Length: 291
Image 1 (cartoon, rainbow, N blue to C red):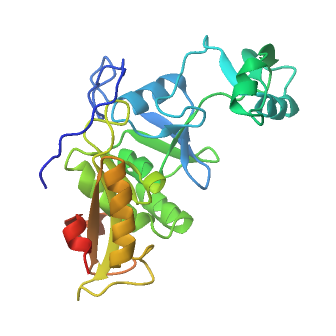
Image 2 (cartoon, rainbow, N blue to C red; image 1 turned 180 degrees about the vertical axis):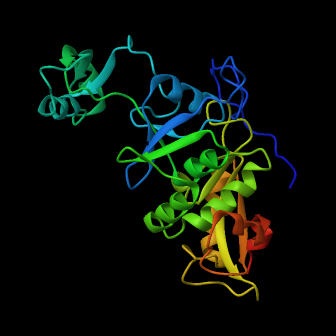
């Protein structure tokens, strides 16, 4: 597949970094990052680890940030009143690091009157809630397989085989998702969830801070006889559905890609078995969606 020229984002002040894994310790060894599996995703909460895992490959998503997480403890957060009130209920008077925040009224009024009567207030947040980075199951297993990420559950380290089973039980689509995720990672794409644009994945050339996604990817699951597996397929790929989704992609400056996943066996027993999965790329345009 030829690489399309991605649209750069304006006013990006971040400098690109080398992707993981790289040598981070003085003795020449790779620094291990600790993550915690909460039954849904894998969270990373140590400050330096969060910075490395986001800046070096753009893995994960900050729970407070919209795009690139802000890790500075000196930055004052701006919260809606309803957000601050929730934190008050969680307040701990013995909080080690209470933080200053600015609370502003909820934006339930009309646009003009809201800003005319805006009265921010300085408050002290004692909830102890801080920015953490959450990794998708595919990102977490990929980094674990590279021996970068060590994942714990209830203080116990989980090995790769146990992790594969735990993630597959958590999400029935994990094994297929991981096969596709790994496929595009080997092609040097930055792969992120695509639910925002109605797809399974988004493909970025350099990463979300620097450019917009080039492709919206949807998965089409087939058996070895090239028959569609309706139980594993998550969406329709009929002409009208593709036409609607392709129009959305065109509007947002992206291309639509169908990723055909051809399974020789199901379920996929272990992570080594993804080598037997055949993956094909089909780019969609209006000619493909005409009846």
